[in-house]
Image (cartoon, rainbow, N blue to C red; front, top):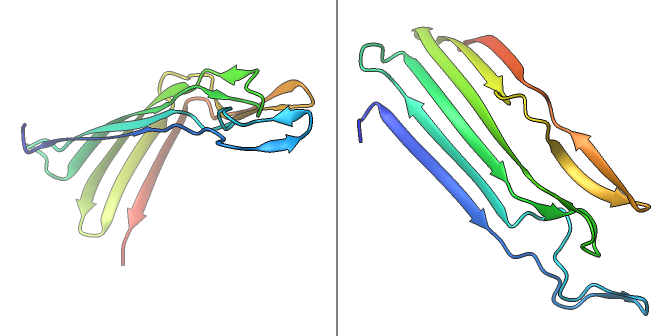
Length: 139
């Protein structure tokens, strides 16, 4: 691979299951999947620093959170989400950088947490497409 290009990736494959949990005589959660615990989480980042401008760094990131149960009885599920983010930074001089970021590039509707309360699905919406720009100075 080109030394100006770096690809990093991480994936978590999990099995969150109650081995033995009897809440009361009417509620046995043994063998159920734990709510709000996705089986798959993943993150991949592609970073590029062009040879013609070593002070410039560009990144594209893909984050995946898989589906999960929203309640302990495993009756309602949330489908998970995929987000794409872009980042760029440029070193102007020693100790001075300008940077920018676009989070949720495709303006995906997503939820940071999804649960069931009193039989009703509840979602905490994640941010829509959001852009940031800044200047960092180190003394």
